Image (cartoon, rainbow, N blue to C red; front, side, top):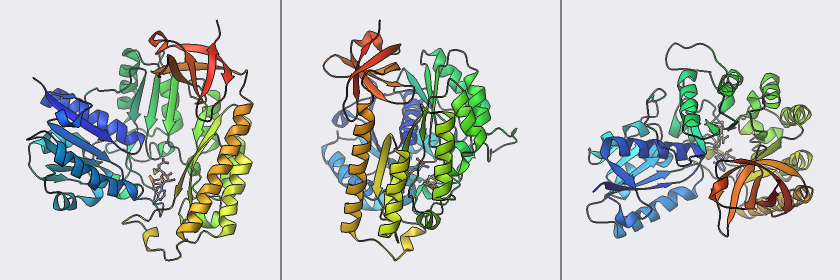
Length: 433
Ligand code: SAH
Ligand code: F3S
């Protein structure tokens, strides 16, 4: 009988891809099969996130539960960003943990499995050319890492400390992976990196200079590939050439993530984001003029140290001007080993909550207003999920989530869909004959 692996993945899309890599390695080299029930598992892995404080607390309470209820003899491993930054401390606090594997060391999964109390958290480890085996959680789209690490030093962000310096993966490996994905029947790829449009800045070996725009062009030459998505680009690196290629290339999906973080140029400077409010609005204007149908999503942090009422009003102003289609908003959370951790001009918790509420209710107003205009519109939808009650869901090119009545025959198919009902997170439609 095969051994069973339970894996829980927290955090971002890069963690999801890292989990796919670890599953592939463990299946191929160690004979594991995945299970949804941790009580049956011979190996329990938590792939952690440390971007905000709460996931760290959650980790230790979850570990306790796993330890109490796990099968006898089952191993527990902690992977990902919290593994990178807490390291051996995890085994000190939870001595029943068998190994700790950092976010930049996932290729060593089968090695640490056989070394009790192993701690592998080297953030300079170069796995940019490691040949991971194939495992994909969706048959309809494939995630592809295009770089590892991040070279920015945003003062609030722990990621450069957990994922190390940025190294681009050679474009030939990315293109081969994209070809394998479409050969398996998927029509969409999703490129991943902390800062995708900084692609090509550094390769670990000798390599031709290929930037992100050029990578997109090369990938779009793959015939059977229909859709290319990516996350996250950085507003600082959104040059004209990139925006023009985005607008012009029919295979690039027309949804752009533009992480604003703050609308105040002063706060942006304190965050070391490298752009101003004016630059951000200028890039949005360029994008909207080149590609009016593009949707724009963003990340905003409220109550960064020193954020005054006036600074916060600038974030609200950008929201009103841009009318983002989706917002991920967070209260600032001080993180270890970041510059902002030492900033003393912190904002009151109550003010932070008020700001987050204001921002989220403005966002809801904007979304409701935009959604009301969707009735009767027609979108080409790529179906990828079977929902409850005989609905099948998919996304439009510009990333609008849409469901229709239907069965699994629609999965992996494109259809034109007319919107017939509006909800805040998903629209309902009818397939046009
Ligand atoms: N380069 C990645 C950033 C990863 S972190 C990207 O652009 O997606 C994802 C988001 O978490 C950031 O954009 C930021 O809005 C938020 N975040 C990061 N550190 C944070 C902190 N210390 N407190 C609150 N939010 C944070
Ligand atoms: Fe973090 Fe800034 Fe990089 S948000 S991941 S340091 S671009």
